[in-house]
Image (tube, rainbow, N blue to C red; front, top):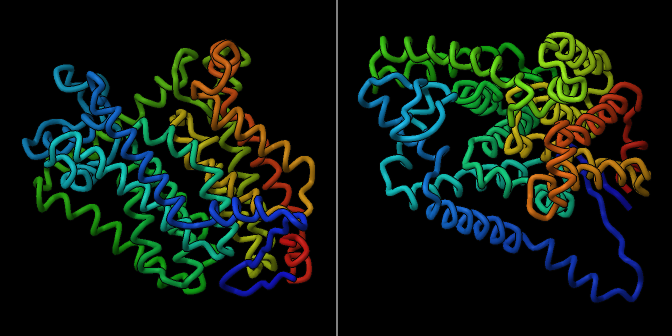
Length: 411
C-alpha cells in the first residue's frame, strides 16, 4: 500500500514470488554506495583518459577564463595557442573555476568532475520522492552523465541547480532557492529556468527580495577581484559572444542546435528557419498548465513541472549539444518514475527511445551507420525528449491530480 506525504511519495516495487536472485540484484542496485561509487569511478576514468589527450579543450577554456581574468584580458576572444574555441560562460565563472585552475590539469580536472557529479547527486537526493525511485533516476541518467563528463562542461551542475531551485522552493527556503538560481544565471543563463517554479512559492515578495539581493551579489563580487570596468566590459562582450553563437549554431553543419528548431532546420534543409515561432509555441505550451491553480498543491503536478522545465530548457535552446542533454535526461527520468503503475505501453516505448536515441546514440555502443546517416544529420537525439515533453505537457494540462489519483498513479 502506498503512502503519500508532503515530504515523500512512497512507491514500492514488487518482484515475482520466489525471485530471491533478482531481489538481491535489486537490493545491490539500490545501495547508495554502489551508485555514488560508480559515478566517482566514471569521473576518475574520464579524467585519466582526458589527461592523455593532446588537448582538453573545454577544461583549458575554463582554466584560462580565470587566468585571462587575472590579467584583464578579453574573456571571449579565441586564443589559438591555448585552445581551439572561445569561452561562452559568464564573467562570474572566472571565480568559480579558480580553485580548479590553480591545480595541475589532471588533478583540477578530476576535482571539477567530482564537484559536478556530487552536486547533481545530492540535488536529486533531496527530491521529495521515495528512496527506491530516486535510485531509478540515478541509474537512468548514468550513461548520459558519462557523455556530459567527457565534455567536462558545467551542464551537470546546471541540472543540479534547476533541481535544487525546485527543492528549496518546496522546502520554503527562498534564500537558497534564489542563491542557486542567480548562480546558474550568471554562469550559463540556463539557471534562470529555476524561476519557472515561482508560482509554487508561498512567500513571493520574500523570494523576490532575496533574488534581487543575490543578483546584485553575483554581479558585484567579481568586481572586487577583477575591477568594475573589466567586469562590466566582460558582460557586454558576453552578450555579443552569445548573439554570435546563436547565429553560428543555426548552421546545418553545426554539432549544436540539437533542439526542436534544429530538427526542423535539418529535416527541411532550411537553415534560415527562425527560432521565434518555435519558442513562442513552446513557451505558450509550457505556461498553460500554470492556469490550473488548484493543482499547485499536488506533489506529482509540481514534480511533473520540474521534469517539463528540465526538458524544455534543452529542446528549445539552439545552443544545445549532446552533453547538454544531461539536463533534459534528468527530466526524462523524473517523468518516468512518476508514471502510474502498471506502466502504459507509451511510457515504456518513449523511455526506450530516449535511452537509445538520446542517451546511447552518441556512444560507440550505437550502430555507426545509423548515427552518421540519421541521428546526427537530423538531430534525432532530441526527438524522444520532444515527444516526452509533449506527453508531460498533456498530463499537466488534462490530468487531475488529487490524493486518491496520486496514490493510484504511484502504485
